[in-house]
Image 1 (cartoon, rainbow, N blue to C red):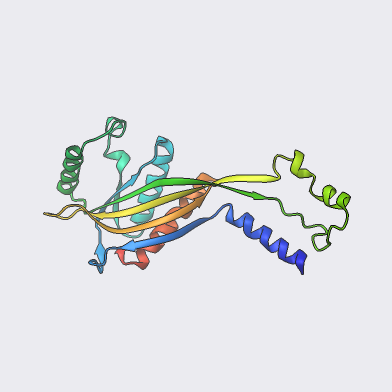
Image 2 (cartoon, helix red, strand yellow; image 1 turned 90 degrees about the vertical axis):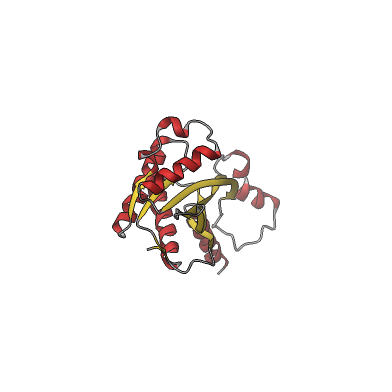
Length: 209
């Protein structure tokens, strides 16, 4: 029984190391339904190729769901994102988006990271007490020399926010979702999963879709 329990724990740890988990959501209490017809997708990512991959996939998913969407990489030139911008400059961007028919901005970013550590589970003879020092030592001596005995990985705390671009109003937050992503082995698959988690939650909260 103990052996089975350790196997289950090990499997959960393994699954946890490739997870994307919705931690919390917030929706503007003044908004019941929010339909968006043209959305600007913004991935605040330093790596240009990763940003393009993320925004492209998110735009494709939104279009499949009947929402017109545009990548920010197609609107913001390289110079715009390579330097710090002022509030006035951003207000001008907001007006340009409004003039072009956009009614929402969807922004995603990593807001923090956390390092986690786990260790290999020894399944053999785990239900036997170590009555002798030699047995205990032999069972766990890998701690000294096996660099993979302890495995470290990062958890990325990310945030996706949906803002309304409304005529005569300041840009207003409609919905926000916080998602934890454990350091992925496959970045493309992680992006797909992240987008699926976010869009599912937005649909459940009656925003955009």
